[in-house]
Length: 251
Ligand SMILES: [Zn+2]
Figure 1 (cartoon, helix red, strand yellow):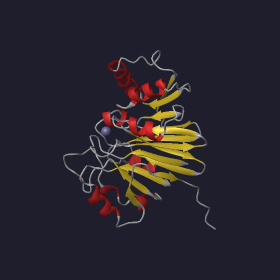
Figure 2 (cartoon, protein in one colour):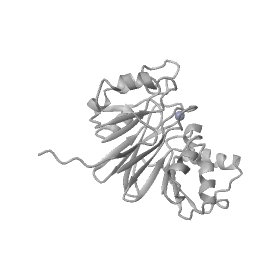
Figure 3 (cartoon, helix red, strand yellow):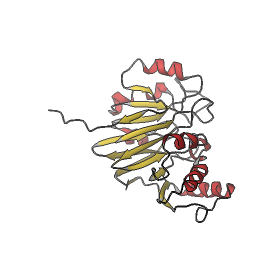
Figure 4 (cartoon, helix red, strand yellow):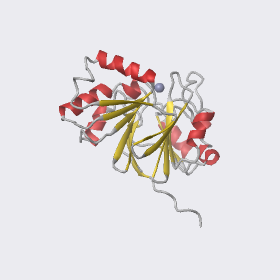
């Protein structure tokens, strides 16, 4: 499994594109979230209009989905032909339909390729992946995702504080990407995670490595210093590529 990080920024971040990444296995590429500042990064880093097989939306705040229409327009201009699977909730489809309407884009007629709508499963499959999801605590429903293929597991929280269900989803992951706005919880941000709530995840949930993203501007240095106290947690970096390989069974 191969992870390519496109963006690591918070919702309205002057320095970093919105949090987004691509997970690839067996030639299948799943992109997670496509916020308003993601498309130019995607076009530069992944210029092939047929490269992405599926898009998964954790939830539908602007920093996680407002890049959809521009992305589809670029791919149409570049003559994409491959169908695109869009995996989201029923509520998410309705919100994306409004987005198409606002952009005067008819998904049936304006694009050079078909869209296929897939409802987010609790436990299902997509391409080579077993795909499981769980709700976090966020200001709108947000489904964290876990992908398993080739004997490795990758998990991504989307947005929001962990719940017992999302912690179960993350358990034993080889790599966990978790939203982390601040070092300590901000009482004004009850729907965002903080480092002090997550720092024991590698130990407590058996997560091999954890990357933090969606960090508040101005908080990265403090958060990097907090991460440096351990060995398994670090800040996600834009452009980073991570290859996950199955661990050899213990002798
Ligand atoms: Zn959000």
